[in-house]
Length: 315
Image 1: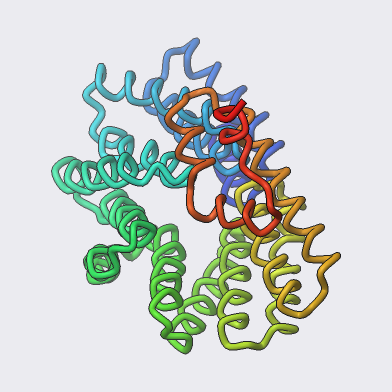
Image 2: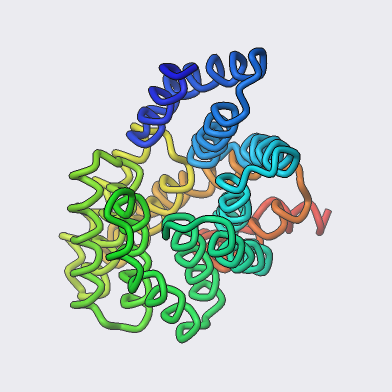
């Protein structure tokens, strides 16, 4: 257990998800048999994280529920401080923004109450800020991000795990507000830290943000190269959310360059990835929020299509 679970945890961070899942599943079963509650909780966290990254959101939620059940029964505050943020991350990924915000604000409060170090508190603040950002609430988003930023000096051990995400979130906010120089700086810093810590999932996100900033600056050829690199790595590590977001951004840039056939191919592939994710969303709320998200609707509109949920409603 003490070998398998940390190995699976490291591989999950490095986005080697197939091997990570093998070790984590074996470790978690051993932890159940012994029983070894804390090791079970660790394995459940990273199983959920691996399934979230690979777009298996319902499976991720099942593991997070098992984690919550164990933590509540054992009164294990280490995990109680993390559960709302973990579940909230799933809701954020599928643009269920009201629930994502509620859970992450709860997570920030619970983490402060139960855990002395900043990591779970700041993870929650970053995700709450992103929920505000996607709702168009820029001031509230920035307040969350800055609240997390001031705690960086308190965390000299694990801060890189949430600092990468914070830098990316600040870059997203800056891009949305038209502050292109700031957005580029944050994206580059996030990419550097993700590269140093061998987090390919975060490398993909930072590269995409760089491409989006270049596109906003009208440097379309450079933007297409950055976005293509992001998509290539996302496909290699098999992170569907990053694939469809990257292909949607790349298709939009290619259309602006007048490469209509290539643009249509990228946008179509993005919708195919969206539909593959949606096919595994059996919770109606999650499926509806995902397929009715503005980013998804804009993508389908560019192709002159409707998301499958709308087709079903109309049929």
